[in-house]
Amino acid sequence: MGRLLGVIELAGEPRSAGMAREFARDKLGDGHPVVDSVVLLVSEVVTNSVVHSNSRNGGKVTVALADCHDFVHVDVVDAGGEEAPRVREDESGEGGRGLHIVQALASSWGVRQDLAGRTVWFQVAYEYRPAALPLLPRQRESPESGETALQSVRPLLWGDFP
Image (cartoon, rainbow, N blue to C red; front, side, top):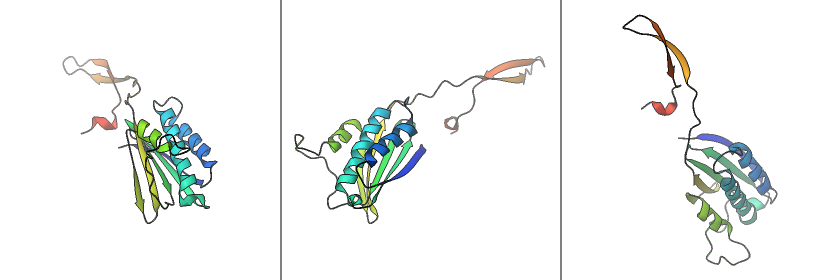
């Protein structure tokens, strides 16, 4: 389970790739372990949407970003098109390297198409390391002596429950 960091709707035009990069960097923060990879992949997939999908004709491209504690999940939704996005065999061609980059950096990715449009999604894995949690003092009574003792405990986290 993760946390939705945000959703942005962009115009289906080339300048939207830069806006999508800014959005991803802002939502993840510069200190996130995979921010650079996610920003690059968002740029590639949004660029594909505004160049190759029917969104380029005055449509919209929507980007949703979630942090799932050991991977970042991104959905890029557009109006679909004649062909589904695919990795091209000719890596030396003028274009078509975007999905090669997605394939190289993403831990998983795919395409979903329905009547409403198309979603290209990807996930970028990272090692989750929770920030050091402060120890909070809590007073308790000692059953043997009746005295009060200071005990250090850490706050409970959602993952502490079965």
